[in-house]
Image (cartoon, rainbow, N blue to C red; front, top):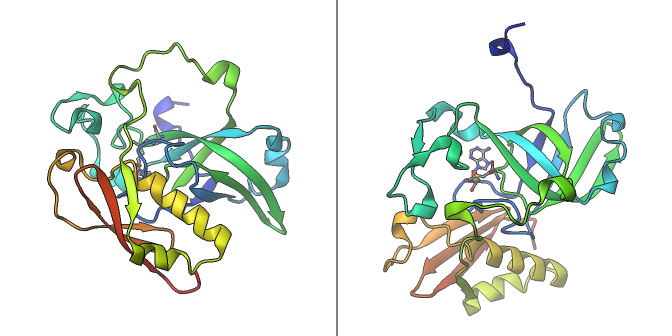
Length: 241
Ligand code: SAM
């Protein structure tokens, strides 16, 4: 068989709280409180496919950057780390525009749920858009996958975080949620916005624009001030209170 004819099919679908690309952290684990479900698709929803998976705390997900496939790719990209001004080779970056459109993320496995025909992996800390097709799942192996001495050039350190503050109005919306949920959602919003989701060319500049981040059922209105991201208001779609 010619290698060019090898095709791959999704084995699972990600039900992610990230409903739009804007504001999704640039890597997994940057917002550890993000919770999602990985639904195994037929015929992989048979428990035989994941027997023993509970013994691993973290999993590798290989997935398709499905929202970007139509836009193709270029040999060079402008990594946000370099402010969007300088170019690097696509294979020297984690760009979402790449020849085979594949991404890889390590997520935390929270639990495994079987219910009739459904087989779900509950995970956290992901950087995947809702409805992302997953083409493979593998256990994360610390002895092989964690290399503290590895060099990572422009991306040696995690991106710097910015402080996030909530107005009284935003706090008021959150305290109407049940107490545990209130705390978790506030933590997640803080983790996401502390990454400063603005485009690279806007960062560190005076910016009066009000941004909207749709996180799960929450529409977060926010503004970047000099050294802090201020959550101005939060709208909640019904069923959340
Ligand atoms: N950890 C993965 C990797 O290194 O291959 C993904 C890194 S990529 C820079 C992360 C970004 O991909 C997110 O911030 C989000 O904007 C984008 N993204 C996530 N899921 C996507 C999808 N299904 N289609 C297109 N873009 C997606």
